[in-house]
Amino acid sequence: MHRPIASDLETAVYGKMADGREVKIFTLANAQGLVARITEYGATLVSLEVPDRQGVKADVTLGYDTLEGWLRNSACLGVTVGRFANRIARGKFTLDGREYTLALNSESAGVRCHIHGGVRGFDKALWRGRAVRRAGARGVELAYTSRDGEEGYPGTLQAKATYWLTDANELIWAAEAVTDQPTIVNLVSHVYWNLTGDPARSTGDHRLMIAADEYLPTDQGLIPLGRKEPVAGTPMDFRVLTPVRARLGADFEALKLGNGYDHCWVLRDGPGVRLAAVLQDPAGGRTMEVLTDQPGVQFYGGNHLDDSGKGRVKYGPHAGLCLETENFPDAPNHPGFPSAVLRPGEVYRHTMVCRFTR
Image 1 (cartoon, helix red, strand yellow):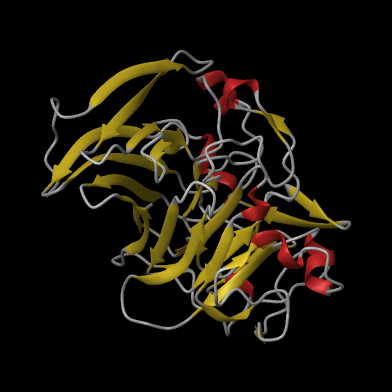
Image 2: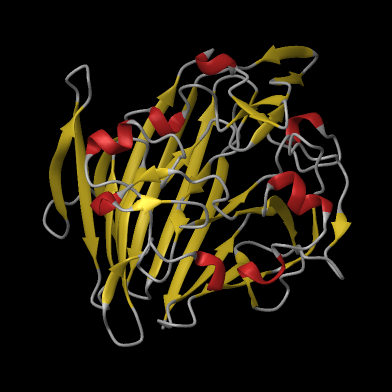
């Protein structure tokens, strides 16, 4: 069991919702200089300060300075996404012979779909947090109850997302969920990273490795076609550390459809939590290893970013990038994809580990 604590992390009031509900923010720090801030609104990673090779700390995430900024967060910066993250074709899926219809809240190339849980997904919910601890780590456990029929999904879902900051320089996001009726679940941490610590600098010079030999091709609406294709010989090949911008201008259909990288890579099979990706800023030396127990990782290059964030810095395209460990997009509509169905008596689990070195 996780034990509530009150003394070894900072808790403060971050602001209030429009209806007057209070929102808390938690600050975690380890002896190596990492500092993480997490808020109850959207179970959001507000910031993560990481030292570079010179020991200079900087925030390596995109976001906002105040709760008011997060309340208008249209790009899902830093949030926990659900009930089903990523896209569902036509906003429809069938479960146990019954068809469910969800909001069509996204459009690509004229093709509408459901994305990231709907109009008011988990990223717009007020979770309830408490401080927790275990050996070598401090954390925040956040809970949210999604009622039967919320955004069109069946079943009441009890969801939990826990952030751990460890003495081994790991930020761990661990999600769990249970349901009282059959439903679909795909909870995702949607952090935008810029390891330079300066969002005015493009992530194009970051070097990326993705531990995948295949990716999921899509139609013009960025919905998976249901098959896997090899990355070998294509701009989708990140099996060794490669500058993100190296092949952005290639004449390749997937890049044209996504206006850059916005696809799911099929991670190599393996037991438990395993390496999914490595992201590195060569200039400052910050390196992040991403590990997960999920079958895929969505690499989104921040192709459509257009906002003002922390310090009133303008976030343009490629100011940050996402590495979203996940089940496959549109999984409920593809029998050959890993199942996204959760039934009563089962526990959904998803772990993502971000390990930092310099």
